[in-house]
Figure 1 (cartoon, rainbow, N blue to C red):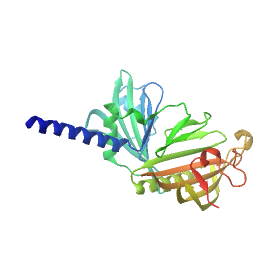
Figure 2 (figure 1 turned 60 degrees about the horizontal axis):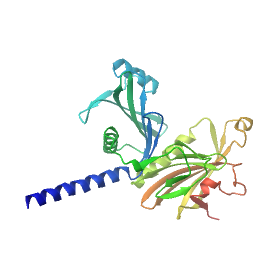
Figure 3 (figure 1 turned 90 degrees about the vertical axis):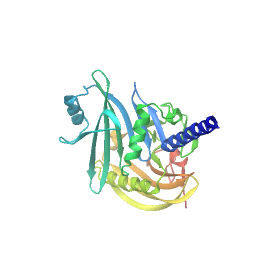
Figure 4 (figure 1 turned 30 degrees about the vertical axis):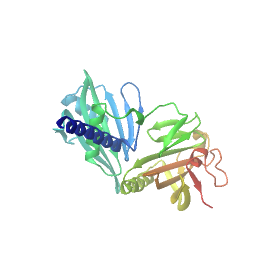
Length: 294
């Protein structure tokens, strides 16, 4: 009887741990970079792991802070959760919007410091950061979240999209297809944080000196089968057409929708001379996930 109870207890713990891990990574995509570098997008966070050639000591950390544009005097702390790890927190403010950063620094090999950075404009979730970092250092995240740099198909909000091989990842969930459009998205379990990302990213983009918003309106769209509204902007990029090699006017859509059990915050853009854009149409990449309602 005792053995049976023990086995049931172990099995129940395994199921609980697996469910907890699935919940942590259910909205995550990762891309492997060069060497041990890796990049992730999850719950509105952009997460990176990079090994930087500086000593893991006081002098090296000061060099890192300078390299990462972290203000002098920013507190370097420690946590009992992660012995021998230094933690730096700071925020970059642009008007009413803020992007929060947390850096975990550790010794990787002689002469190198491993830097894991969590950045988000949706508001921090410290418990998520800790559990994700723990999974990274214990190599316990599921391999299924990793995506190849070679693109023919991708997973978008729970379904597979077949794409042209001309498309390339600019980062996790940041996809560019020359002359076919670009989209950048994040998937959330929380609608408030998804909405916050759209509001803050729209504001941050409006502060960009390299572009001017010429017009903005709300339009009705069908996004992944969901009838929602989108913010439609016409944006002029301050780069001459001769240098651009084509149009320097972007059409940008900001969309938030509940898709297949997750909240998707998506920013899509197309140049006015991209394929298929004439007569108020969508470029092929955008048309894969959205249609305009007349």
